[in-house]
Picture 1 (cartoon, helix red, strand yellow):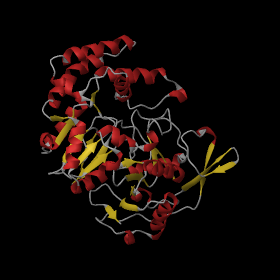
Picture 2 (cartoon, helix red, strand yellow; picture 1 turned 180 degrees about the vertical axis):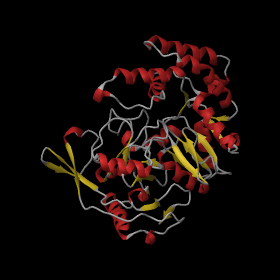
Picture 3 (cartoon, rainbow, N blue to C red; picture 1 turned 120 degrees about the horizontal axis):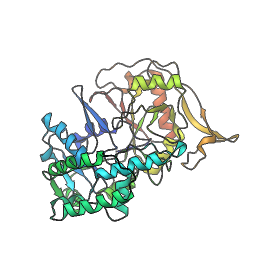
Length: 416
C-alpha cells in the first residue's frame, strides 16, 4: 500500500480495511513522521510507527528493518492501544534490524532546520528521522536487537556523545527526554523480536499473505521525489524489498492511494496549490491538519501528470481514491492535465523541473453535490459528475480505481 502524492493520502484507513484479508501487515520504512488515522466507532486511533492492521484480531503486525523507531513515541502509541483493549504484545513483531531514534537525533533535526533559511527550509517534522537515517548509512546507529545486550547503555552513550559534539547550544529537552527514552526501551523489550528477512521468508513459505504498508508518499521518496524537499527513506515500491528483506518477484498487487485532490505538509514545490479562499475551504472541509505535526496542510487540485509519474514508477495495479466527499458541494473542482513552462506546454512530470517557472494547465472542471454518508455506497450511487471525474483519472493514469473512500468511517468505502 503506497502513497502516490506527498503523504497523508488516507492509507491507514484502507490498510485497516484490507487487513482482514491478510495474515500479516508489515511497515517497511519511515518512522514517527508518519500519521495513519483510523476511526473505529467514531473513535480515532493515530498510528505513527505501529502498522495499521493492529486493530484486527488474528492479524500479525510486523515492523521491518527499514523503519526507524522512537521508543518514546512507541511507548505512547502502545499505551493508547492497550487502554483501548488491543492485545498489542500478542499481535506485533519487531525486526531486530530496525534502528532506534535517540533524543539527540531530535536535537540534530531541530538544529539542521534552524540553520536553513527561507527557501532552503525542508519543513521537517523535527522527529529525528533524517539524522537517524544518516547514522544508519554512516554505520554508527543503534539497532533494536542491541537493547537486550549488556553493552547497550555504553553504545547509547557513545552515539549520544558523538551527537553532542556536533550540536551547538542544544536545548535541555534532550536530557529531560533521556529518562523517557529508557522507559520506552523497557516497553520495547516486552515484544517478540525476530530476524526480519527470516520472518518474512517463513511467512511466504507457509503461503501466508503479507500487506506491506508504506508511510509518506512517492513524491517524498529520497531518490525519486522532489529533492531536497523529501523524506529520508524509500517510499516507493523498491523500499518494500529493502525494508522487509523481500525479493522483487514476491511483490504481487501494488495498491496506490491518492486523494481526490492534493495536499502537502511543509516546504517544497506544489504546482497545483489552490488560491487562498479555495485552499481554506478544502482545509476546513477535509480537516487537513497533519496528524504528526498538527500543521495545516497546503491544499490544491489533483495533479494528473504527477499522479501518472507515481503510478508508473511504482507499477501500480490498483488505484484507491480517498476524500471525494470533501469536494462535494464546491462550485468547481479543477483537474491539472499539464504544465506551461516558458511558453511551452508539457504533460510529463519530473521532480527535476524548475518548479518556480511552472504554471498548471487546468482542463475540464467538475462539480457535484454533497455525498450521503451511508455505508457501502455503490459507484452508481455517486453523482454523475463524480463518476466522470473518477473515470477521467482512470483514463489519464491507465489504472482502474478499485476503492473510493467518501468519509472517515471504516465502512464508508465504495468497492468496484
